[in-house]
Image (cartoon, rainbow, N blue to C red; front, side, top):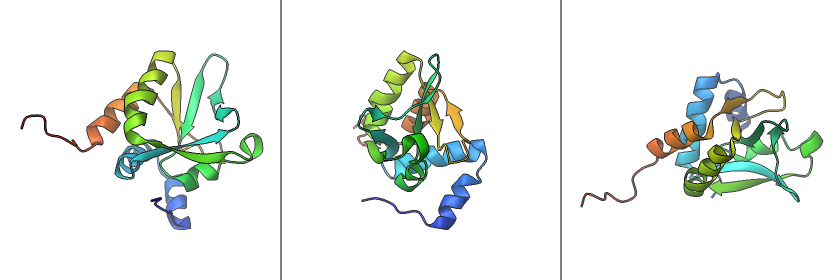
Length: 134
């Protein structure tokens, strides 16, 4: 089930500072158990240069779809389960030297993050499903 943002919530996210935006992204992706990317027929969209690739991600589909214009026109918002995100995507991105851009918007504002930092903070925020001590 998707969590739907109001226009006021979308504006609130757009006005957040970097630290608040980062914390919001981690909290929302863990709470809703997914991260959103934009994908077209060639795969997930990316930002950056030949030397530095960045994967744009959002905590909500509505925020991702706001960026589905210009060169990303026709892309669809695709959910990535947070467990797969934390265990596979972020590890692989770290190995490849790729970075994340969290919540880029139509004004090209975005927060660039190292995937292993996001992985650490996401895993720390996730509830422990099984207490292995018992």
